Amino acid sequence: MILAHLRLRRRVALLAAGVVDGDDQAEARAHVAACPRCREEYAALESVVSALESDPVRDAEPDLPVSVLIDRVQRDLDYAAPKTARPAVEWRLALPAAAAAVLALVLLGPELASRLVPAPPVPTPGPLAAVPLEVLDRLERNMAREHAARYLSDAQDVLLAVAATQVDCERENDRIDVGEAPDRSRQLLARRALLVESQPEAVASARTVLDEVELALREVAELPSCVRRRDVRRLRQEMDRRQLHMRIRLMTRELEG
Amino acid sequence: MEPSQEGSASDRDLMARLAGGDREALAPLMERHYQRLYRIALSYLRQPDDALDTVQETFVKAFQNAGRWDGSVEAGPWLSRVAINQSIDRWRRNRRRQATFAPFVEGDHDAVLADASPSPDQRVRRRELRDRLALALDTLPERQRAVVALRHHQEMTLEEIAETLGMRLGTVKSTLHRALARLRDAMPEELKP
Image (cartoon, rainbow over all chains, first blue to last red; front, side, top):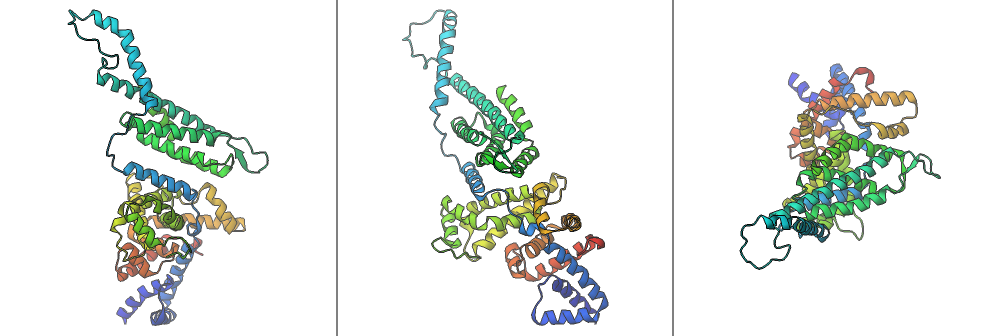
């Protein structure tokens, strides 16, 4: 009798959960009807199940459009893919670096020459060949870090502007005008791709912050010019939660040396 | 689980393409399963941001591990399994970081409740109930939490839960029983419906 009660007690809980059917259900219901304690137990469990079934998470909608999530996943997979070869140096970054090296050679060349005693008669090399490779590398690296610092600073301007904007849209209620922020975000994203591809090692320490800034910019880039206040608020909350502005400031300082 | 959209590839076709390294197959698969997986992650984690991150991780894992999918289960339950495992991992990480608990539905999500509950009294009561429920769920061990999420938020059958979590049917039943008993003890009488 006691064993049968214990066996049926678990079934009563499953009955309340709505997962018992057929003969088992009939047996459990008969037991509930005959056992006052089990009836009480059943009512309490049923109320828990009812609370669970009115939980708003059941119908919650994601705040992020699926297209943005698809982009994020593709980007994660890009980063996860093994790098088989060092990407070619982007000419727009490499050219200023080479120019700086030439300038350094021109300015410092006579002084360096005067210190050479006595110089053997060797054929004069071309200007770039005379600059040691490690010096060129260092120059490239420093310039890439400066670019990254400037990029982060510009990105922060855009993100702060979006978060702080209070300009109402003319025609639509409860919407605010984020102006050129989506366009500027798209331009910044193009710059970001250039930065990371051309000198990945130079900006490796900034990678986490760069990635998070990229996510934030992608969200802004997806916005229409008239945005629901709640969407801007959610963006701001997300940036606050990630302490993005403080981390951008710290990283910018680090990159600037 | 399998959508029957004419002219579009089946989940199985898409999984096969993923296994072959075709990243283009991700987008249609994500469009079909995004919302469902979001709700699974949200019912487990109860934080919208964490749930979104978890869904993102789920699809990255799905692509990386698609080669291991042998077709013995449908893509939907397989993705659910990845999502719930990712949710459990994140929950553990959050615990380790001792993240401060914040109940689900803050700020913008209140609008959802406002629509569903006409009177202010009902709204207040629902909010209390929701917060207590979130706290009670937070006390459950991870497997119990997963079973409750899949059963009462996703309305999966016990068999589907067993398949998703890789548990035996009997274990799912006893886990559900223990979880409900624990929740019953954690919920205050006055807030029960």
